[in-house]
Image (cartoon, rainbow, N blue to C red; front, side):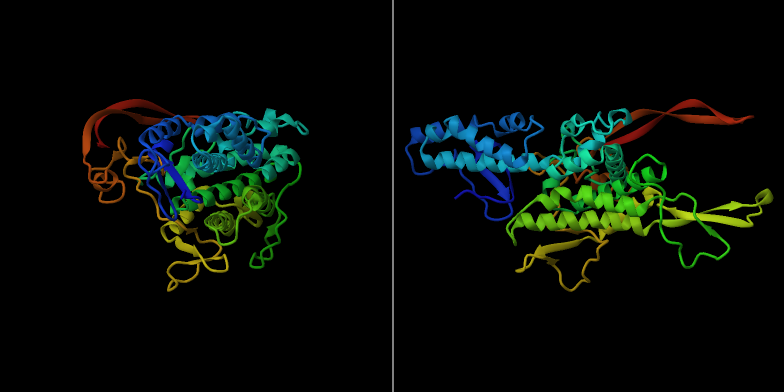
Amino acid sequence: MVQTGRGNAEGGFGGGRTTGRGTTNKNQGGAGGGDDQGGALSRRVWMETLDCSTVARKFTAKPWRSPTQIRMLFKLKLMRSGWGGVTDARHGVVAITFCAFFMQVFVEASSWWSLAMNPLLIPEAYIIGGQPLCSQLTGLSKGQKKLCQLYQDHMQFIGEGAKTGIQECQYQFRNRRWNCSTVDNTSVFGRVMQIGSRETAFTYAISAAGVVNAVSRACREGELSSCGCSRAARPKDLPRDWLWGGCGDNLNYGYRFSKEFVDAREREKTFTKGSVESARLLMNLHNNEAGRRIASDLAHVSCKCHGVSGSCSLKTCWLQLADFRKVGDALKEKYDSAAAMRLNSRGKLVQVHSKFNSPTSSDLVYIDPSPDYCVENKTTGSLGTQGRLCNKTSEGMDGCALMCCGRGYDQYKAQLVERCHCKFHWCCYVKCKRCSRVVDQFVCK
């Protein structure tokens, strides 16, 4: 029996090893057992030459094809190529099942996060009514492409929000085994995002918050045609003699647009109620919302003084988003206390450990344990910690003992160039010299 549902394939089809949630199948030398030796050998040969990834890239090269179209065309191509005829019908079905699953993973691995790396994301490219742009953007779902066509001037800021989220993720996890590294394809973070772990939860939340941040500020700065300054109601606790106005960040619009765009991919999916895929869908939607809630909850009233000689006899106040570092710090705390979840019989997420309080809408949730980030693993997407810098004197996660996972470390001499002997010159700039010094660096084996 071939495992279906959530899983990853390792070592090509010839290895026959599949891992995932549910029963694991291990077949040596291909998919068949109990046949003659010659037949087993021929199956082994064609399985090892079945390169699903190459075919997948060929089919996804057409931006106008939907994920469903890609999978249907792929199955048809596989049948016409004669994979089912090389051996008996059972093995043709095995090949099609395996590659169809691979296509599911490959297609859905593409993400709107890739807008952060897209060279098309420049203001000059966003001309109202310019249809070709949206079809050139990779990683967008059908609904997201429709939103792109309706709000093309927003796409630059969607990309900026994704980039802000990725940069903050890399800052928050700079001293962890998993450091939010990106890879050079449209999945941005690689296969590690296919696991419903704490790290995936944080990534979804911080990127959704990044979109809230970027779009809200773009409204305030007059960059978008469909929104302007904030229209938030005057806070009840604001002193009566302070003016409520100015031009604040349009948090309400940024929140609503982030929800519409970021959640579009999840809302388009249809899975059987109670399936593993539906659990992941619910997890993604919850963490997207958590990121938006944190960005909203940390917004604050900012004021500016007016008056003769700075007397501050009058204040004008407005709503302003918090510095994004505070959003990252808050979500990192949520990451550390994230709740492990499972599906109940009604198809809803419930806590694995019922003795704890139920997570709120601003808490992070996850459904899978984190993979081992110590060693490189192409199946899980872990890049490992070999070659990472570590702190010899630290006992924390950045220390060599934990970062290197007990493998030890190498010591090197490195030349560090930094600014020094800085002087203020009237008026008004600071001039520095550049000094170099030799430092010890420790790198994981």
